[in-house]
Image 1 (cartoon, rainbow, N blue to C red):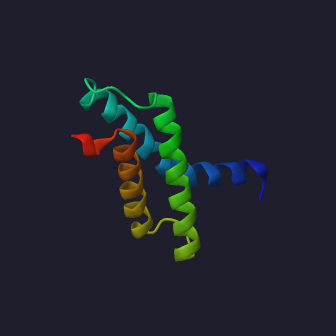
Image 2 (cartoon, rainbow, N blue to C red):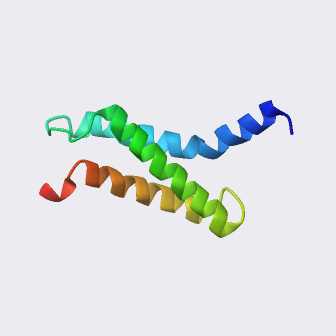
Length: 92
């Protein structure tokens, strides 16, 4: 495997985590604009990306291969929970 192909595989592996993190942060900027943020949008993006990559790695380990729907469902649930905690959603 050449370095270019390996890099392409890595980008395709972390791509869903990056997209989910970006959509969550953009949604926060649009829909929660009047609430004070505990973290900046870049910190939220980084935190959601890290959580998403951890979930994808756990899904790869648990399922034995990448791309299972259960892993993607866990990705969305984990990132949404992380964003809810960062935004202090329990305060209403």
